[in-house]
Length: 224
Image (cartoon, rainbow, N blue to C red; front, side, top):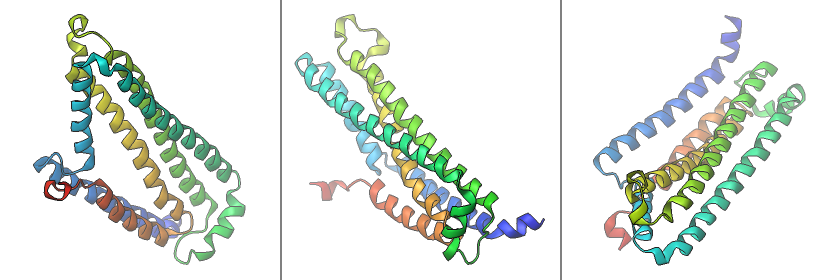
């Protein structure tokens, strides 16, 4: 159990950070159950659904729709490319574990300095960026399909290509994009964990506060 005592501060910090994020999402889930537009994500889903219905019922807006989706694809492609660069950079860190771990742990007064733990931290960061990459890549894939679905004439469309079903696919792409961005946000505490467990807890607390302000939508009376 020597390894457990050595890694106990880091394990406790990771558990506390996971608990903070879990509690935040539990709170968010309860609020969304009462009010689907409590978060900006819910508002965006409604907006995308209305947009798809409007475009499919107005053939004159086909060009505008394609341009809008092209902008989405360009943004998601840029973020996927960024995730790829971050994956490469993280792999570079893993090859210099002993040298970097010694210097980066200069402020680490309670956590372990073991190279094995450093590798685990880097692997967690690597997994986070891989999730971000696949989320953005899948968002691009879905939107590419939606581009064709939007331009299908209503009288020739199959029931699976109804505005409601097309909007579901576009919303799925939007949710995947949000997952990719959220993975980038979660990388911040993981990066601070490289410096020590105390930094992980502080960074996670700051992230939860930031997400609380970013996720909420404006109340109707304030939006007017």
